[in-house]
Image 1 (cartoon, rainbow, N blue to C red):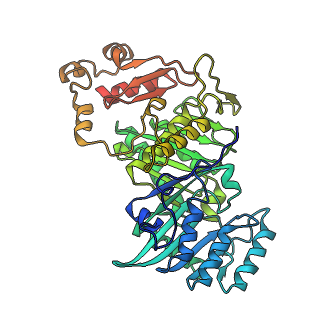
Image 2: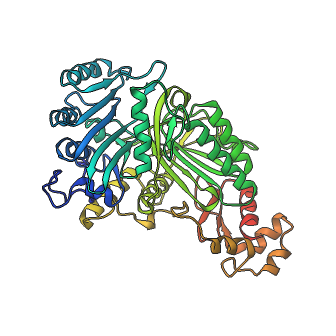
Image 3: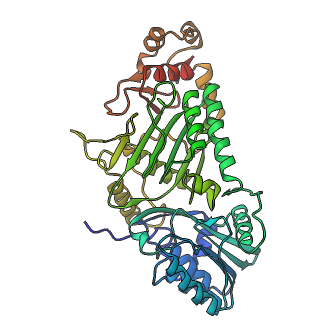
Length: 481
């Protein structure tokens, strides 16, 4: 059935983008970060509205944008031209080496330059792949920076068929970081000091590597450790090696990789804790999401970079943290519903082949249908989140907030949550298979799953899934002994 992108509930009530209205889009962003998810949310009603507002708002001083691909009749470009016509300082980075769009981008460069807009063309040896925009606005309390960091292009056409995310934020640290990136496009070097953003090719590889290794350290210490990554491609040999090492340390890893994936999951002694999924549906899965459990202090990111050598070393890329709990809940919903899809999901086997996940006698769970329904429900609900999260459809095993010390103490010391007192736990701390599974027989079960053979109920009330008896045993020991 046909699908029309919907207004974002946080922005649908705004009648106009001008200051003459009681509330502008900038007021709404300042009130709290906004997460747009295309094509579920309208590109015109979110990103395009943001740029239109920047072009017409009398208090906006400057507009900057990085264009990799855009439509042949781009309203994005027209907004930038309008901004210049209205006296704003406008700077645009146009990537001339965007494959298949070289001619289109050259034509836009000529038009922008004819309008007197400062155009940068990229850097020798690097392709600019960021999907970022920055608005500088004069307000009563000083100059405010408004940022958009996305996973997809400023292209109204592909936004109707590509699944992408974008963060609209007034976070000053992110704004300062973006300022440095845009300064690089017209300056000599790319700064390697950023407050929040992960920027390739200067900081991203190092930080991602650190976070993967940190998960491995947490797993060795018996703390919460999990990685879930949604990307288009996983090709970089170093990142593959880091993921193998994390798996061997006991980190549970789910990779949702639409296209090429060099990593082989399910190899004994190497990658049995890794599962590789691929989702192919009516929309092209293009969004990048990164989750690191970090011992109970979770970190969430979205951005433009895949885990490919070209993205990490030879492109200018931007990945941003997502810190708002409500927005993290939406990202969790996307990931966890994706991992239980039984209509569009394929799972890689250890030999590199893929097998389709079947619903069999279970209700069909199509992630893209689920997200369409969640978007419509949010619109019916009125002002509020971009999606109404149906908690009955997900496990909620991923964390959106830090685990409190009391919860951690309960797991490590033994409490009513475990169903055993400290003396009973000590009795069964020898690590033997029989004693662990017998002692905590109410804490594990065999799930009805084509992927996992074991499931463990954690002390925090979550469920963790394992392919091997050894993985389940280790988790029981970590949780309860």
